[in-house]
Length: 324
Image (cartoon, rainbow, N blue to C red):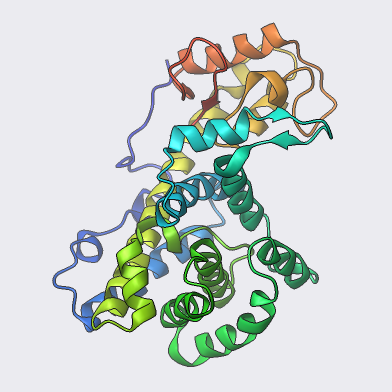
């Protein structure tokens, strides 16, 4: 039986495990914090640019989008749980126009997932980013993006990301998600990534953002420390996904269900897979048919083999994924 592999596995990318001297954080001085942030992003950047191992980047982006949705829900005062946000997005019923009615929690996750689909290498990415930002604050992206990129070239990506947070909050102190995404885009462009990863929001607090807005002493150091922790979190998730994705790929040839290869591809893209809708009556993104019964059996088989898990703990309306 293929079993879940621990994140301390020394297999694929095991040599890129975060060393203790990065994560130990010996005192939150400006120098130590800047050093930790630089080292954390260097490790993350190296991992994301690996050519020898296949990191499922869509899955990574979607997992980080869920975590960012949970974090920004707290920042916005709603305090929605991860399970509730995931259900609101993946189990939304269609409305009269055929579009899913997700509610505020599901819409928040949809917004972050949309951010993860921005391709910064495409010629029209600024147009797409402007549309995404204008859902929350018209004109903000166009006014702040250029100065943010210029600042990154002079003071560095992390300092520019912190400044972007402050700039957005100075315009609207309730635009936390927009501020975090602006910072994420500046980081991604500075490091040459092909998409923004939802990072900045993961370890921020409402108090730290309020202090940043008000210019409180020591707040910028605390924000840099939070962003460094977010880079470390993303790095650990990326390494873990390589292990779990390789375990799934290893058993894929043994699956006998028709369309199993296409179904495996869905598991390598999305963090939560609903048998009904995503695998049945057709496998998402394909024309491959699959019955509801076959979809449920395939998901249960993946759980039996130890390469997937059921995420909800329910007897019905279940969701499955290779990572939690």
